Image (cartoon, rainbow, N blue to C red; front, side, top):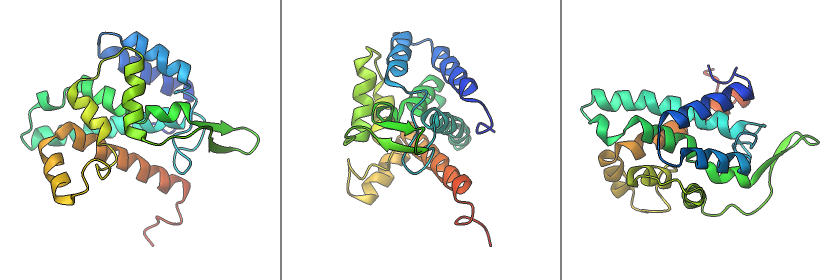
Length: 195
């Protein structure tokens, strides 16, 4: 559904979602991510590897996270544990650091790394802070834990316990994975066919 939108439509949707949070310093965050190249950056070297891939991946993550949020609410979690504005911020900003390290070459038609990008989750949190925008503690955790948490907690059972008690982190992690998986299926259908 979102893959058929133009880059301008995706940019407009992302901006409308960010502004809908009515959060303090949201306009500063928008100016910061625009200067970083967020709306033109590829999302990865492997998936969403096209101009606008980062905003495409982020919007897919947001839409999937909202579906997962509804599931969590049906399971008995409180909406207050995963406020809509926090879902918007965490989903759209979880990979922000990629905006200043990934570029797309119109000559080779490939994404490439233009500078080191170690500490992916932590760099995204720092980049958000540079704008003056303040993340809530659950938003910060969701961004830091969105890649599965192995870099934070090596014990698998402890990670399972963490995600069970931190629903925003869980839905962002799962939504991110679903977006990546669907992108891989779109780009490599022969590897993921049911036959």
